[in-house]
Image 1 (tube, rainbow, N blue to C red):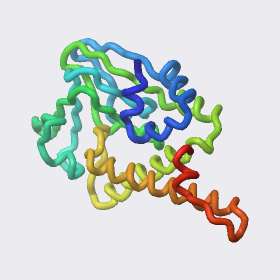
Image 2 (tube, rainbow, N blue to C red):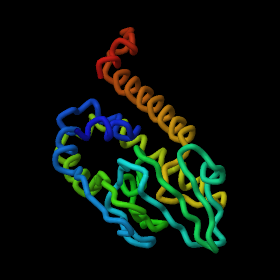
Image 3 (tube, one colour):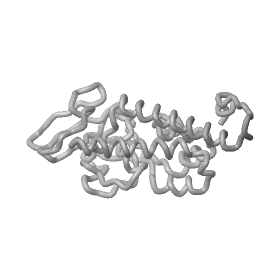
Length: 215
């Protein structure tokens, strides 16, 4: 029931090499949580230990900081978000089928805003600590793609914040994520070819594409 939603996240798409791990994550680290109208999902400043997947359009995300400079993807109104300012509070309406607080999966993270339910809502919660425990039980060589994606993802955010932009708990722009995903795939392909090159006797010719296709 959760598999498609989990794999919709590019970082977890690299887990496809281990379907057993994906099933374990879905069965033990993902749960549906209900929230009543006005109920809080998380607060700004709180330690983030979970990611959240929206199943409806009932959530709102508030940030209170008149001085922050949002990321480029947050500066424009789009079909994904409907936001407005009220005083020094910026309110963003979240639509369905979005992952929130993804940074919690890839590094230590504190929430940058306040997420709450406008009306009764159901959210899928992914326990990042539980995912880490499950990953530790599997062959980590199968997770190279995910590790590379995580490094590039966090590196992108660090560079973004180095220019004065602010990373929130909202998703990155789709174009940014696609760029990170493509770089991760290219890096993994290069690492795989280097690994096989080290195993092949000198003078032997290997078609890397045929070797890596089933990897």
